[in-house]
Length: 539
Image (cartoon, rainbow, N blue to C red; front, side, top):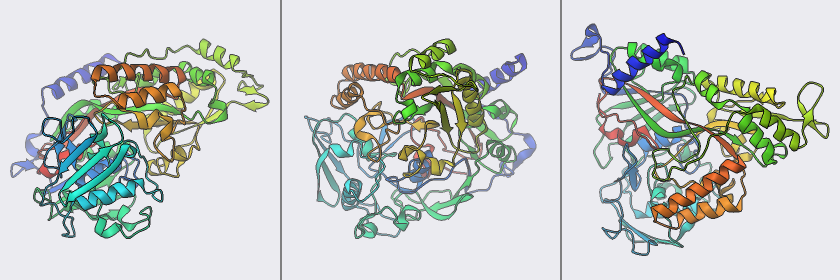
């Protein structure tokens, strides 16, 4: 990095820390920026949802859109704390919402919640959703924690009582944003399954906004839900502009064709200070990029090959070069600011050790320098979402580093909606390596990612990891509310994951969000979705 670049980043960081923004004196019109469209928020988004039904949607875009469309029993605030949504209060031991043995939860619901077609939203909608999640005809993306529910009752239209098979320290999260919201029983209950229900693409709403129109590949338009229990939002339209190319996203921020650019790509962060009329916020968020490894593939089933990949790639150089040194290098999938964050050493860049591991695994140089075993070359594929320059550059660097230790790597990228689809490469297991981001909730529970009970189609363990130590540790951490005990169990689990290498954890997203200075109430979140309080936005 040049001295000029260092000074630029330092000056920009000081500006962000001071909460300042650059607003040119001649850009104001009637007390606002000339480009502001009063009552309209234009979001610049790299992706569109793969589904608007959270039961089937696998992308961050689905979480974001659903936070606008649906009400949940609970939400998270910007710092990951539970706040009431449809529920009148967050259940705790103190208020009687959680029984003393930790096996019964009680939710009391608002009486004024309605669907956007005017029908009341009641406990019957949640009960339908619970049955739909467990309905084997439905391709539910994950049953994590839902399968711990032994039974549920709705003694009246505004009370839900949930009985658990066993104590589950993270169960409250399934009722919150990022989980599955109540679905409209009056529209869906008569269907044998809802896999292809029109609702999944054109849902009615229980949240602040309704979907007015979806022009696939181009934009989504959201308008206020007149029946929203908090009252219709003041913003009369949220326009979600699908802009996959990061250069185009930044250009539209510069030309003020968008009002919000969340997760500004690393290349353009130093240039933010030169744009007038925006406010920039900066925080570490619970999105972690990783190299996922499909250990069910024959060439990757030997842990020595996976360790060779982990030690044969210069991860720090990739962060510095492809991602401009912005993000925080990761050692696990537990948020580093969490009380449960483990102490795990990073994989040391050591090509010599990588070559030795591959030789021990029986791979030897072929005529073109690519390793061979029983006449078969060690050739793998890597996949990520299309149209991201930083990710593409990272893949090329991984390809180069692996070629240097004798592994041929082909790059095969997909649109995000296809990559994460239920029948796409990740969830069908038709991939070798994947370079994607996962999003955490505030609780450190990661059972659905590594426990063998949640290998697709039963969950998101797309590395196909089957290990009794990981299974026991991740399950035991769910069964106690003792934080010290849980922390020790996550340490044990992460040490084992580090040894088995079903993934290489790369970075935690050090996220910069640029917002039109006329947009008030927009508060980027560390967890799940920046739309967590979208009914409070004003412009």
